[in-house]
Length: 512
Image 1 (cartoon, rainbow, N blue to C red):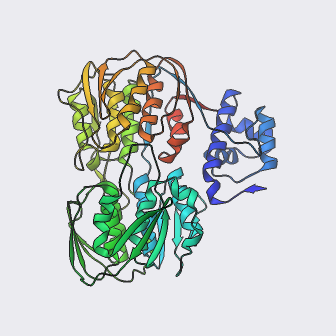
Image 2 (cartoon, rainbow, N blue to C red):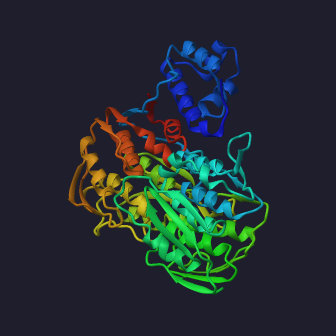
Image 3 (tube, helix red, strand yellow):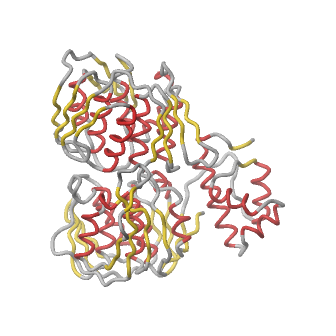
């Protein structure tokens, strides 16, 4: 048996991490392991990066060479991390492409009759789940030899009856199929949207955006049953009651193939929406108001173009990496950070006393997103005077808010973190107390963080929410001693090779 299917990409990366950690545990270089196996050092490097197809015979030889059972057929289990913390990081790290832009553009590819090639796509679980849904309904999705660029071809007819319901229910991004599919079928069904455990979230804001295009949705037995009645008017104005990112994206996806002009007010101008606008423009959709809260979209009934689009860098990953350096007292450079979507975060950090330098700005590969290299220096932080809270862009990004809890724990004074968006996420941040932090839950939306913290090692089970889980991992990097973070699979939803890149900067992390 050979592991070659694209859906096994995550498994290959996990096996690669196990190989890397077992090799280091035995004090072997890649060249020494290659010599034991009778192969090349570059082959070992590809295996550890998850870019090498593996046979069971090769897995057996690897297990023997490393004296470690890397994989057991017929049995699966969760992944855990062993973290030896308390040492600064060093060097530099490059921000990868946006998770949220990737899933939006994968959904948007359903609009295009031509070929869509997305450049520099992060190989993360969320992408794998959307791809599993797309391929199950007949879409062709092919990675290039390096596993970085993805080419998508959508057939004339989609087989929605064959949809991978399990993959669909495990991602909230499936909700963004509504906008493209209302142009392709007068009646269809989608499984309920899933994702992180962040409290109850209604789809009503999406319906407010999509009803003007004739979409009606009724919940039936774990599915959304959708029907479409084509509207008569060509031009319309939609006022979104929630300036949400996915709500705005759904409205854009519906407007893109609507024969007429759609004005979207109270639209999100956030980073993933900007990526979607740039992609739709390549397809021939007219969009005025790029980067503002009012978008005027001139749609085309048929979108048929062969397009290449390089995804922009992920500001939330950039904030994650900056936080790793801040809490460990490190001098660290985060390269290719999208500064437009980090300016508020950096302003708050400057108020807290963080010393950092910014390189001159330069353009991302898409020609529009502004990038900088951020170098942070070890700093004595103080609590901000005001509470830290998110706002729609250009405010502090809601996904970056949890990182301020772990940063505030290193600062002198008291900080109120107010997460007014999600019901449960503030509760998950209280797990930082297990590592020595003073985090008091004021109510389901607010925590009071008192610092500075003398971090201590602990064993913790990952919370069922992506960003709080990463916050706990980063706090473990600061805690002297050996910590264990269990059931970390949720982190792979939004990060590619996070552990490996932290290790390259000096972190001591073992996957087991």
